[in-house]
Length: 538
Figure 1 (cartoon, rainbow, N blue to C red):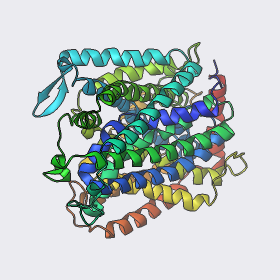
Figure 2: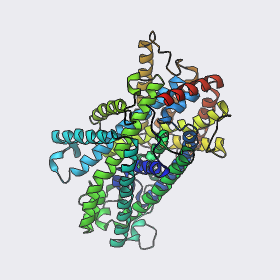
Figure 3: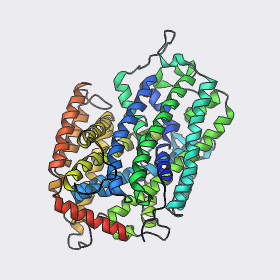
Figure 4: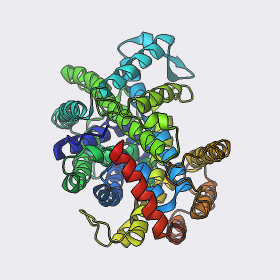
């Protein structure tokens, strides 16, 4: 059964908006302020503009290939099976863990109202047994919502997205009207604060570690749902760019309102140790301190609606990635089946199991978000690389949205990806490197075990090791640069400023290698035609 093209541009943009406005806005303002002070506003601007460059590359790719789960297909078109698997593996892991993250955000937030859900262990809020049961029930509810089909999901998400935008904008207005202390920004002669107390390093670290990048990463839901768009040639570019601009305005406004509303007592020990009653749910706690009780109630309601609305989208998007992996031969064919509702339910239930297991190794919102941000951005690097490769491999293909200055724009997008990962620091990058290594091990083991049972219908049955030769130094050298870098956990042997130059040279070399080692045109055409045929007949 074919995926149903039943979603208009507004529904697609709401999918992207719904993906972006999740738990990030509920927690990001506090953590960004702790890491960068009032200059955290700059962190949100950097994150937003950087994401726009990435979105532009996905706009061309998604309009050219309006297929569901396209992010999993692009590297197979350009570099074959191994690169396709590694990048798709990483994307799938991050999307599935993001489902857990959003469900965790809701249950943890509710723990302040229902103490039986959480308990303190080493000053960290973790789930009780009852809390895990509620996580299971909440996750099951999110899964069931996806079973109603793409059109129902889009219509419901359109309503949820409107709510998710109204509430944070209302918070901005109420905070500014109730308590607007501009001296907190550190820009006036009477201010006792500094605008950038931790310098450029604090701003850049906030981009990577405080939930800024994570908050913007949901833009890709518009691309992943391209297969259900009525007019993908117009809808996808508009939805991607429009959603990011709207959310950038929202996040910058929210950060300013949060900083301006902070009482002096909250800053008594400096920005890194902001503290006030109820700060575990920072916006609700601040609203309570300001005496706006009705807003506290609204925020607790939104703590359910926003994360779960985003979780629903991650369930849908991650299932389509599994479906594409199955169609390309990188996961069992069992998961490629589409239910009568037009939804890949088998893939959704696989993700349900993995998402529940993902609760176990993480013990807090900030710890998991730091990893997810770096992993998502690493997987996004496939966009600019694939765009340039496809211009060379398939120049004759129709491109409804054609990115101007595509080589320069794609390189800038790739460079931005690498900077954002680098700003995460060694403490995150080594985990990312380990995840990629595990993916490579799974790939090699799977192909070894199936070497005598290759399905002739699979796409890219060749392993394409040569086309992946750029990927090994990419991850290896990146890990070394992070170890000697100036950000969290690094030895600081590479000074701030010099590392920008090092990363630019490194990015150029890897970008060039990725283009030199892409598939020949004939193989790229064959992989593309085979996978598109499977999508059409699925």
